[in-house]
Amino acid sequence: QKEVEQDPGPLSVPEGAIVSLNCTYSNSAFQYFMWYRQYSRKGPELLMYTYSSGNKEDGRFTAQVDKSSKYISLFIRDSQPSDSATYLCALGAQTGANNLFFGTGTRLTVIP
Amino acid sequence: NAGVTQTPKFQVLKTGQSMTLQCAQDMNHEYMSWYRQDPGMGLRLIHYSVGAGITDQGEVPNGYNVSRSTTEDFPLRLLSAAPSQTSVYFCASSPPGLAVFYEQYFGPGTRLTVT
Image 1 (cartoon, each protein chain N blue to C red):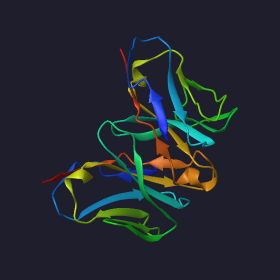
Image 2: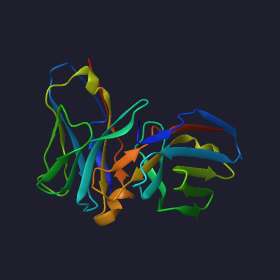
Image 3: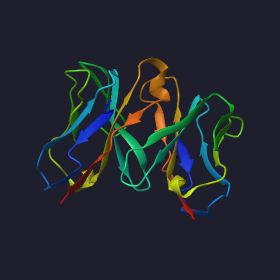
Image 4: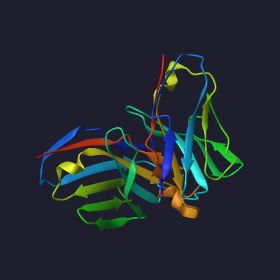
């Protein structure tokens, strides 16, 4: 069983739509929950992270963590064509430098 | 700051050849790591280093070697390339402390094909 499960998509939405991206995980030791954005043929870049549970908002982006359900989400409001990218979730546990796991990524296309 | 730089951008190797993927960062980060990214597999950790002279294995270390003689550089060596090593390779670095879990800066990647 993978540490992190992420629906690969692809997901295609019209400009202005609200996008919901999700990951599930199995290890309750995870404390750090990150979302990375990766444009085609580029390296991932950190969008936002959350420590422990709860919500975090940054502009049009909101990250949610539900530790009881082992479920994390990224919401994008008023989606723009420039949001078209692959979104990777990543989870970290403070039990060693090797305990950082990435989802496979969800490819998002925002249609003008 | 240039951030994390990687060379080359693209490489084609024949089975059995060896090569070194270069990685450098100018942010004075102690922690550096190498990942490979394959379709449907996500990013998988190959090797990592918590400082000059200190390296350790990640999830998929076989067939790869690393060394860390300076804070800035962290090269990855393929000892005898195999088609299974065809992948996109990313180098990353992190500030010290707990940031290693939530703040990684990735390079642009090296696309490697082994024939």
